[in-house]
Length: 79
Ligand SMILES: [Zn+2]
Image (cartoon, rainbow, N blue to C red; front, side):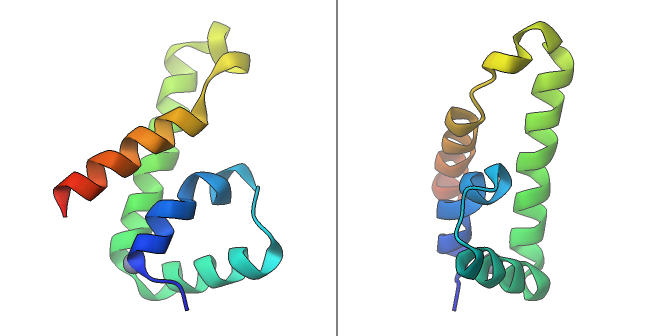
């Protein structure tokens, strides 16, 4: 069963669609029961879309991986 720390770990892969189906389902099920992680996921999505809206020219080069990494660090420091 996925825990909150796993969500932080896999969030970027999940959003990239870069996870095996079994993990995606586990993660999804955690999101269903955990409002904290739903909010966390929402924030990452929003940040990514904000960045690509603000800098459309660099969209092809947007490093979402590094961005998610940064957010992950922030959320770890918070808790
Ligand atoms: Zn959680």
